Image (tube, rainbow, N blue to C red; front, side):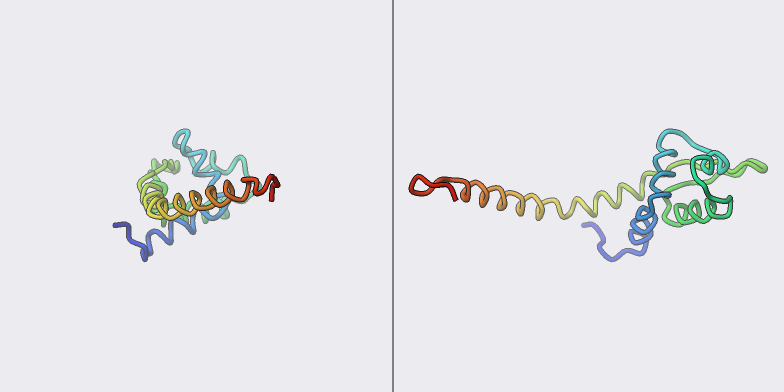
Length: 117
């Protein structure tokens, strides 16, 4: 059973709620990047990017390896898998609701007494 009251899950969704952090995740899905490389596409200061990286680290979505002055960030997909599992626990509900909606729409579209409603 997926835990519905989890501080860790809250951290993951909070981290993913920001478009800049989602863009960083997208970059890291391609390959590991240095913090400097992660800064390039954004009009932010090093301090601002560092705050985004720290939020992603807190959620466990990225790992940072320090090699001298170089900070190399890489993606950790495990927390996203946990979020996916949590969302998947609602699949039966949504599938059933969509099936009911489809049936309702089909019944509404059937002509009655030669007329469409």
